[in-house]
Image: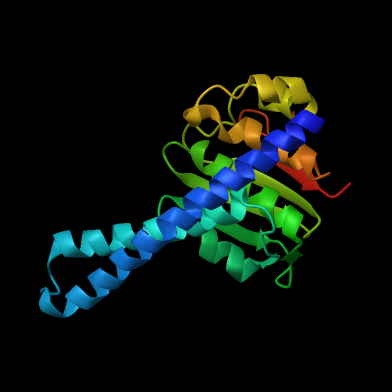
Length: 206
């Protein structure tokens, strides 16, 4: 467990450094596009696409920084939605009370779960949250919706989660499992709850 904690701290430090190094150029890019907008016709599709891509990149960087870096903030529903808005993935928060607040550790793991949920909906779909700010249920629904193979085992077995860290494309699932464990949160998969579909995840403080 100590070695895992050290590895997570190293990963946090690397992630923070990368986010810091990228935030400046991305901010400059968005500023340059804003300045150029007055000289570009409003119907220029290529320029509109560039502005959208730059804005998406800046938002994705904020999401990754909050999910992977240490000492993230507490989040309410509005700030959560602003971080994770995705055109192909609808975030449904109607199952949570409007005044829900997520503590910093819960928010951080939840942001990682939402990154995992996005990857688990390759053709897009719906990500629905329910419960409370300290006991959250996360469901995914859409074509080919499925958590990665081995998720259930990695959530209960630290060695399995470490062994599942194979390459960047499969990193998010074991990283989420290890982070939840390292922060003292309970993350489980509710097998049998949604026969024929992807079972929901449950994140709780105890």
